[in-house]
Length: 226
View 1 (spheres, rainbow, N blue to C red):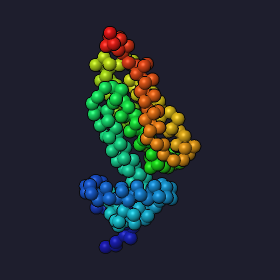
View 2 (spheres, rainbow, N blue to C red):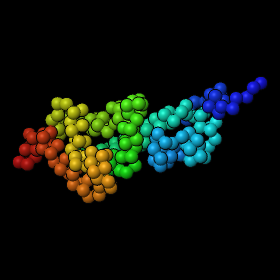
View 3 (cartoon, rainbow, N blue to C red):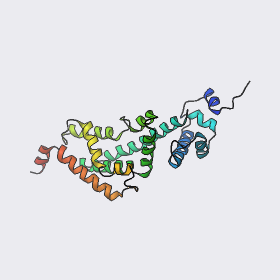
C-alpha cells in the first residue's frame, strides 16, 4: 500500500466535520488570526499558520480546505462575536437614545480599531480576485450591524417611539452618521491612529440627536412635554 506524502490528500481520506473538536478548531483560527495580522493574507502560508497555531499540517487540513477556507472561518467567528456584543448594547435597557448611543459607540470603536481596519484592508486587497471573501466579510446577513439595528428600530416603531417607513435604510443611515468623519479616514490611513473614545462618543451623540430629531415621534414628544 502506497502512502501519500501529501498531508492534504491524506487528511481528506479521513476527513471529519470541521469543528468536531471546538478547542482545536479555535486554536487553529487563533493562530491564523495572528499570522494574517502579522504578514497579511497574501503573504501568509499554510506552513506559517501551522507553526503559529502549533499544529501539524495534517491536522490543519482536517479542519480547513485551504487558506481561503480558514480566512472565511475567521471572518465568521469574529463577526459573530462583534455582533453579539453589539446586540447586547441595544438590549441593555434605558431610553432609545441611550441604547443607540451605546450601540453606535461600540460599533464605531470596533470597526475603526487597528485590528479591524487591517482586516478590512486585507479583504479589499483580494476583493477582485476572491470576491467570495469580500462577500463573506461585508455580507448583509443576520451578523451585520445594520440588521441588528433594524430589528431594534422595528420594535421601537411598533411601540410608537419612532416613525420610520424604511427601517433598513434608517439603520444604515444611523451607522453612517455614527462613523462620519472617522471610518473612511481610518480605512485610507488619513487617520493612522485609533480615534480616542471621547471623540467617538461626541460623533455618536451628534448622530443620535440628528436621528431622533428626524425619526422621533413628534406627537409623542410634544405630549410628554405638556
